[in-house]
Length: 165
Image 1 (cartoon, rainbow, N blue to C red):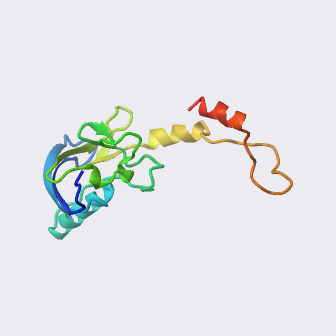
Image 2: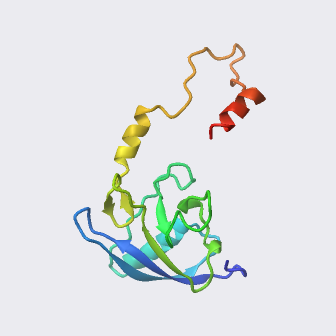
Image 3: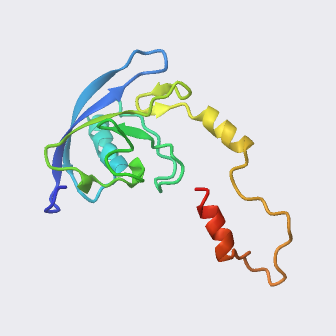
């Protein structure tokens, strides 16, 4: 961790790939004056601002919700999915996780089913197409309670659900 709350300078090795047909390569960037309170994606935003000011193409990455829900920010940081913290998506990963002078290798989450589209963006359409098919949410056909309030779950029902997750 940065420890003292001061800004950090980091070296980034970022996967750059123009399109799905391009071979791709790692490109090194310096991330300067990174606040430990920034999220990982905010740090990439700052790097992209610098690249744009220099007339260079920004790093393409996905960031639909930035709330740790959608999963589109799936990156691999130093060989670990979403970075070094367990159960933390890249958009929820704060830079205080890293130390001044660290070197970060950032690449797309690679899987045969999700080819790289550009830089750190993978094609997640097959995943979302299947997600819609399986209806991954609860569907209740019973009418709402007469008072219009939410349906409550008993502790036993909750325990049964928790046991499956």
